[in-house]
Length: 381
Ligand code: G3P
Ligand code: CA
Image 1 (cartoon, rainbow, N blue to C red):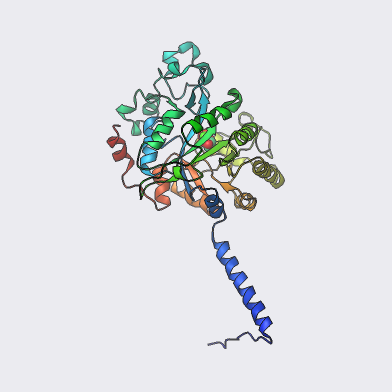
Image 2 (tube, protein in one colour):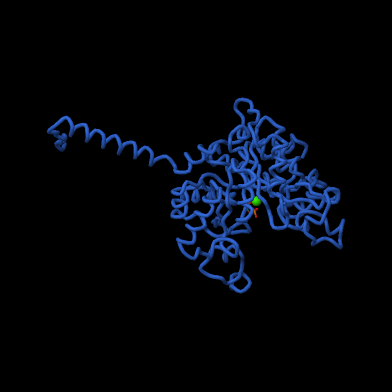
C-alpha cells in the first residue's frame, strides 16, 4: 500500500482556504453532474425530460384527431402538440399541412378546391371532411374501422381533450404558416385566456400527469421569427421555443443547392448532408431567439434509420452546449426510436417531440400502465 500524504497547513487561515476550495470544487462537481437543461426547464415550470406528443400519439392514430390526443393523454405524455391554423370564418383549428389533400378526403368532397389553402374553408366545410380514412390506407397495419370519418379539431376541442381525463397534459402549440394568418398570435392569446389556460389550472389527481398546473402548461413554438415576436408581445409570460432548420428563413447552410439539384436520392440523405454555415451563424440564431423571448429551441434531428422525419443534425453536442450556455432548453423534433432517443439524449437535450409517446415514456422509465391498443379500444377505437 502506498503511503498516504496528508496535506500540511501552516496556519488556520490556510486550512480554511483549502477547505473552502475543496467545498467549491465538490459543489462544482455536483453541479456539473446535473444536466444543464434540467434546472432551466424546472425554472420555467416545464417537465424534464419532456415527452411532447407530436400531433398527438400520431404513430398509432390519425394525426391531430380525437384518438391521437386521447391516447397521448392516457399514456401520460406531458404535452399535446398541435399545429395552429385558422378557418376562413376565423376559428382556430389543429392541422399540420397548409392544404387538406394528404390527411382528408377533400378531393372527393370539394374536388375543385383540393389544393386550396386551409384558410379558404369555413369551419362547417372543414367539418364535412374525413380526417381519418387516409391513415387506414397509408398504414394498414395500424388501421382501425373507427378511424373512418374522424373530424378536423378546433383548438377548443383539443383543449377539451387535454382537460378531459385524470392526466392533465400541457399544450405545445405551433403557429403554422403564420404569414397566412395575420393576427393569429393575438387570436391565440384570447382563446387561451378564455379557457383559463394563461393562469393556474386545477391540479391532476395524485399519481397523474400534472403539467397543466405548472407555469409551463402552455409552450408556444414557431419557425417564424416574426411570429415569435408577436407571440412574445401577446403572451410575454408564456414559454416560447424557436424551431430550428437550415435554409431560407432559418439558419444559413454551407450549401445553397436545393434537393432537386443535389443528386441525393432521398430527402433524408440530402438533409443529413446539410451543415450550418458557421458556428457563428448558429450562435447568432440562438442569441436572436433568446433576445426575442424564447426560452428554448426546437432543433431538427437526423435519425439513424433515415425516413421522412430525418432532417438536419442540429443537435450536435457543441450546439447543445452553446444553447444551454445561453440559458435555453432544447426540445428536438421528431424522434420515435429508442436508438435515437439514446444517441440524441447523450448529446444533451431536454426531451423530445415524438409520434410515439409510449416508446419515449418507456425510454424515460415512466411506462404507461396500459398499452396503446388497450387504451384505444377502451376509448371506442
Ligand atoms: O413542432 C415541432 C415539429 O412539429 C416541427 O415540425 O413540420 O412536424 O410541425 P412539423
Ligand atoms: Ca408542429
